[in-house]
Every structure is written in structure tokens, then in C-alpha cells.
Image (cartoon, rainbow, N blue to C red; front, side, top):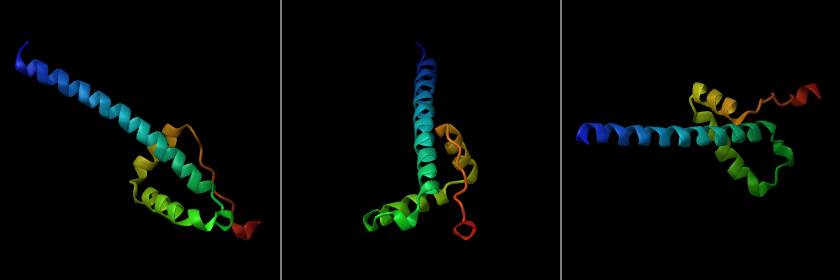
Length: 87
């Protein structure tokens, strides 16, 4: 088999693996975004606040398009949390 053809096949296989991994990461990020959107900080144990803030900051650093892809990949629909002023 010519070297170029072998290289193309190896690259194709690697790209396919990366695409599967990307999809899995998008699903995870989408589920995390839903979790953060549904959190009630007032009810969150103090021991979990640091992790929740870190997760929220990570999600906020994501590109908007990527975050929307993540939410779509998770198969969930994030609803806006009710405003404390409207309750």
C-alpha cells in the first residue's frame, strides 16, 4: 500500500475518533450547562459552591456556538431559571 494512502487512512481514522470524542464532550458540557442553569445557589451546600462556580466559569468561557452545540448534543432544553423578583 502506498505510504500516502496509508497516511490518509490513518488520518481519517484519527479524525473519526476525534469527532466521536467531541460529541461525547459536547454531551457532557450540555448536561453540565443544564445542571448549572437549574442550580439554586441558596440551597447548594457550601462545600459544593467552589466546584459550581468553577463549572459555571468554564461554561461561560465557551464560545456561544459551541455551547449551543453542547446543549443540543445533550438532548435537553435549558429553561431560564425563574427570577427571584418574580416569585
